[in-house]
Length: 336
Image 1: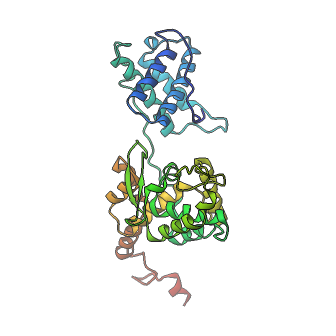
Image 2: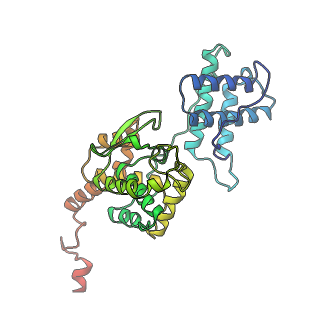
Image 3: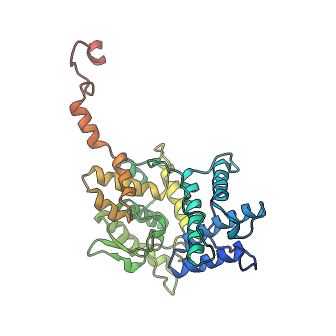
């Protein structure tokens, strides 16, 4: 069951009590409550799949759905295999079940159902995974040095990488930056309508500001096409960068650095948070910079950053140092 594509395709059907029409009502309700378009599109895609699964079993109306049926669908998700033979992650399963619970909660509140069959549906336990890769400070510098700054687009790309590294922005937040979101005097970026439709202010370092200023003076005037769109970073055609283009471009620079690590924009986000934590930053400030609503999301970086734990280990574990502490000797001493 592949990840839903961006874009909204509403299910079709004319039965006033049918699944399709009520899903459309739910979509209208989510939009009226200011849900993001990404959330609306994803939930619609998940509900379409559930509707198809139900139709294959002769179920076309929400009134026919019971808790045991929902549990059968949940087992279906668990046993499903994608075209590459891999199962759906428990995180993805949880997201799809959450969409179902939201839909049936809406139907209950709007009196289409007398009771909510998904009220007691348990979500799978989601594993807490560490970031696949985090760069050290020296590795980050190697990636930053990859763009050819003698080239028009290389200079732009260096400024983009510096902003990612300094501020930890999400890729969509970066491509949406406008000229007016950058305050060079205060050294801040205004992130407008980030994840969860929340604005926030984040600091940007002096070095990143210097590269952005160089880009604004030497590159952007050659890229802009009137009327000026106002976006900070532009393509060859004067358009804002696309998320997919940015992902591919940053990944190319990471690969060119030959670090043995892989990733793209989020790699810099993980790196910024981890290095700040290792430098002594309070996790609450990192949470604010990253725009995390839940502090538990930021806590993951306390597991990645282990320098303090290493220091304690070196200071307290009798076998941590390469020196004699008793009858046995270290390999270096035995070789001597």
